[in-house]
Amino acid sequence: MDIQEHFTIPIKGIHNGEHEYDFVVDDAFFDVFENDIVLGGNVEVKLNLFRQFDQLELSFLLHGYVNTTCDRCLASIKLPIENDFELYIKLVGEDFETLESNNDEVMFVNKEESRLDLSQLIYEYVLLSVPLIKSYDCNEEKNPPCDFEVLNKLNVENEQNNSGNAMWDKLKDLDFTDN
Image (tube, rainbow, N blue to C red):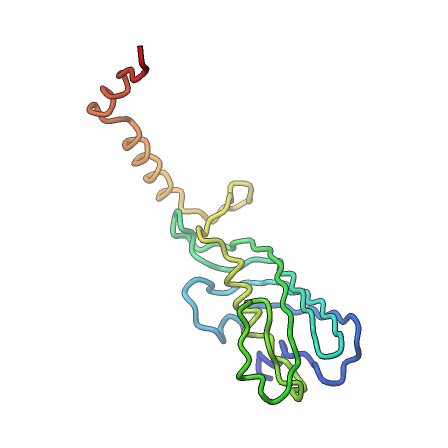
């Protein structure tokens, strides 16, 4: 079975109202998409779909972790992520490709489509959930993944840089208040 087939939902023939779907994004899913940021992981995706005539409202809730490299110590870590996203889908006629949306939360789909592949969207939502600085407080873990040798070297270097510079220390003594 194609991995993306697992992340496909029916859109034609489902009745108006609320529908719920649960997906698990794992290493096999991430292998389909080549990326240097996310090397794997385990993310639960809960999708709440509300259909109203020719419109779908999709609410995604992501919770889990991704395997990546720590930006502080370069060790492999399981970075916790949690996020939610909203997407509105308008089901339109054959000219859906000519319609453009100025909003990232609105997507146009041909109303003759019977199924909707969400794999690319889910992948992008996982990537958007990864913070810009990939690190977290792992000291609470039983076996922290951090490379403490690298972190100690960074701390020593920071202390040396913060010890001060004699030239700038002289400026601290200047009084700039008006008398």
